[in-house]
Image 1 (cartoon, rainbow, N blue to C red):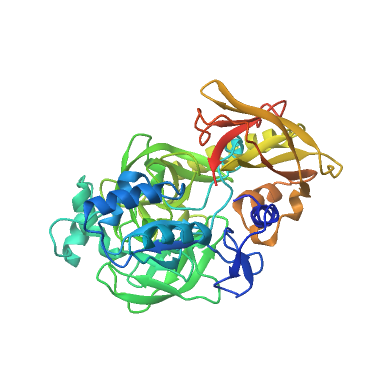
Image 2: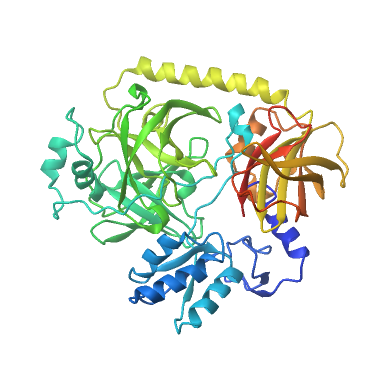
Length: 509
């Protein structure tokens, strides 16, 4: 999310007199429609869960229709019907307590009691933005690669240690089923009180994951194995810049995965991903490398075409030989099927030494790093000249309410109340347009503490690019937008804005 996330919720709450109930974390009153507690910054989002499956198909259909009218994050009608037929179905995930209350009222009309549970979500970063074109972030959300079909490996029994050592890490191409059966025992789900992620073992008692998957200092990392064991983990080392972490799991006795070489990857290669999307552990998905070396924040990422969902961050990216070539790390919000993985080479080069160095061609990796460094220098030069005219970095809509964030580079504090023209365009047709007024401006260097560790902000500060940079928020109703054109996914255009940053995709909030 953008740095204004907490202020946004305050703006939303100030527009109406919201119903408030105690925050489940700190007990202070917080709006039922809020997403983040303004007091303790804890998530207010919940899941709506049913005690058992709805067996009658007619009841499932009518319930699904009614629930689907609630809007996002409610799934499609077909998916809702399938969910209602599953054991203990989760019919809404990551929704506000207000929307959850509406869902429970619908259920109660059919004599069904739904319960609420805190939603297990991951930390997020900025959402999709044209800044991605400059390579300074893509304003990527720190989520995992997901929405993967739940997979149960054929064959039943787990592979023996000797079979894993013999087949994994060889040159033979394996089927997805074979790879899954071989590696799943070494891949785990990592949970904290408010988040879920993935990890994989690189030695008998040490696993690799993302730094952003780690729990807060006051929380314990719980490690869940495919054989139903649950152990606790201790952080051994972490690198925030590369978003990698090493975790010790005493008593794991796991078979380490074989390590490959990401430097030899080419676009078009097939890859396998295994992790815990939306809390569903041991989920397998196939993907394709769409770009072997993508610069983000001065780090070489593997760009992968695959559907995305929270929970897979920290899981392994595997080649067709079953070797780990990357660590799944990022998703671009609003870009369907686009994810990123950190090359595994970072874990055994550049002084980390998290993983024993395999036999690889060092010159190839040096070429990767040189390519990324040159791309980063071009990005720096471009951003230094950006935002002399205001640029839009995010636009969201909820009903008729728009929430827009813009950036502007100026030596003086901009004045609140400044107005900018805008239009909403879909497939060449204008849905609406008008003037939006900026309700507040803030220096980019004064980003809230809760967002100061975001990679976008860290990169901008590290390169000295935040000087004289301000962000502003506009929050307004726009009833003139025609509903004949779907607004979600349309282009929000800042008329007369920075030519490189004058538009972004309109997302639902």
